Length: 151
Image: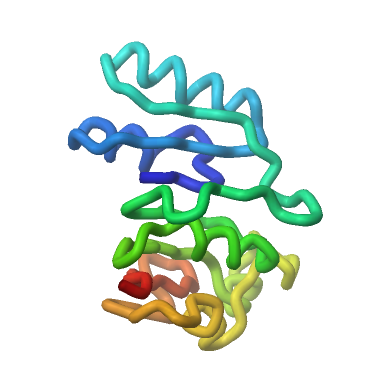
């Protein structure tokens, strides 16, 4: 499993605690150090690494390497081809981030970091959408999808 833009590793640590093998990547070296320390303290294995996800061209995340790719509260549109390629045949992407309506509430405001209406489904082209939602949830405007890659 790959946790992309993992921040301080909330999802990576949870999944490792549930017994999954987890790689976690983020460009923030301090956040990655925190993930590594939390994993050590909890006796978990999380392979955490500093990776700049916004290089041009985007970094390779490994072709067909992961059963599941997680992305929460992060959007860099040029990374989507690498995200899709990283999923094993029939594997999953679980993605959730803010929509343009979130700017009405404050942070984030930059449209580069906000999904347009229906955009997440389009970005997951060639994947089968198993579940999705878009709207206001817990006081935030988000779009979410769980999608299965081609078999």
